[in-house]
Amino acid sequence: MDSADPLSQLADIHLPEPVGFWPPALGWWILFFLLCAAAVWFARRYYAGWKQTRARQFAIAELDKQLATLRQQSEGRSPEDIAALNLVFVSDVNAVLRRVAMKNFPHENFASLGGAAWISFLRNHGDASLLDDGLARTLSEGRFAREWEVDTDRVYKMAHQWISSLYLARIAPDKSPKNASSTTLVSDHA
Image (cartoon, helix red, strand yellow):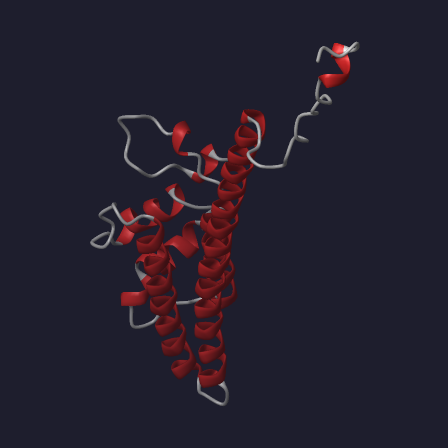
């Protein structure tokens, strides 16, 4: 029974199965998690920017609404009535500025600020380059006066610039000192 050729009794060589797609190698898993982390980081950053833009647009719309109301109510009025409406406009602008400040600086106690302290807060926490001494007196004292000379366009422009500077500033928390308050001056971000 011995056959003359023992090699003819061997089975053919079996090739291994081709390498499949699943499960991926460790390097692909690492790349996948890095891409997921990057996508989450970009999505959160985009969402935060979108929220800031929306809040800024809402605050500016509120400011525009106050100016439109002033202009609409001023039509055909006497100069005394217009002067009184201007003082109401100053109070309304101050209210908008305080709401924006409450949104951006929730841990600061500025609600009780008035006069020079309120003006100092505005100058230290936003771009108040248009806030000269006359406009500062108007914002701090003019809203309580019976008669006051008010340049409503300057008040509007200053408030618009201050609100925009708060929302457009990129605040980096690692730049703020450890023992300082939670606010960072806008000049530190430029």
